[in-house]
Image 1: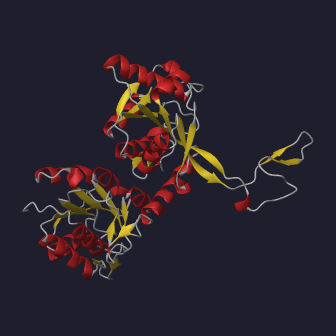
Image 2 (image 1 turned 135 degrees about the vertical axis):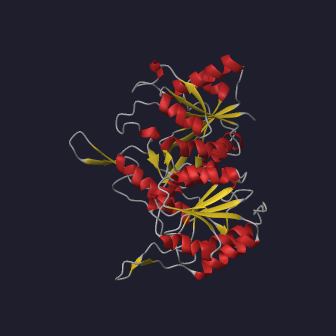
Image 3 (image 1 turned 90 degrees about the vertical axis):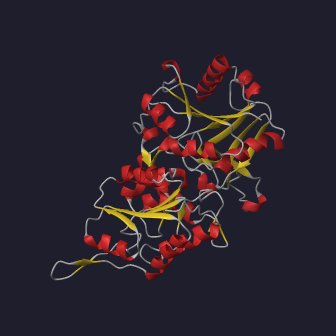
Length: 402
């Protein structure tokens, strides 16, 4: 079944200028929806519809195709449905492409998970429906003001309050995911037509980015979700780690140390590290894993500790990403096969580029939100040993003889 995911993203956001490309947990806002669509088991093609060249470039950089829409479909009153129809017409005219169904995704819902997309699409078949939407359960009492200003119950009788289990179940449209059979949508030109099915998603995935404060709330929720990912036999869920693990790249302060520095009266600095982390690094070395440390810290203590651990080390590095990519390229390792562990905002570009980003439990909230795996241990207190055990237990380490 051919399923096209379409993500409308116009450039003229008035509430938050440039909203769709502003950073959220180390990635542009729109990149989160693109990643979820690309990870979906049912979606076969991902297209962003936009009128904005910056959004288009960002979308392409994160793996989506782009269809540029005319200005007439990019104004404040333009319908999302018209943008979807424009994409369908453009692809059909250019390629004769006609998908069986559409997944309409809102890039302002960055907590959307691949399973949310797949579940909404599956509802079309499972419920023999023509259209579907993602919802969350709603258990609250709604009120309105009458003509005289008095409060009136909307979804309840104010004179007799039922318990939750006695009430008819109600649901809220999340605005995150919609699914439509293509032929019916072309005819109806609206997202809800024929029989409409609902797919319940976790309430933790429901959030719209409408106000500046929503970015902070979303990052905090992403960090909590990362901590709550299921672990089986000491291993994270199967899709967290790369299928092939060829390299581990580490920050130093806050990862191999507890992020504190001790200064003597003579001005000499020292740091606190974990011996168990050293054992974890030794186990990974024996497994044949390529490893290095890239640190912003210029103090010689970084190099001294890395020599003790027999680790390659580059310190005093202000911008880590170019060196990270160069180090991988020299060894013939794809970024997708690398694990990067960092603890602060200067690690975010590397965390985004790596196949799997990891953060210690006490990392900065932005780093935790950007991580696919948030460890239980703090930096300098067993985080690397925990990660080492996890990587070895996965059975995915690809020794490359370095």
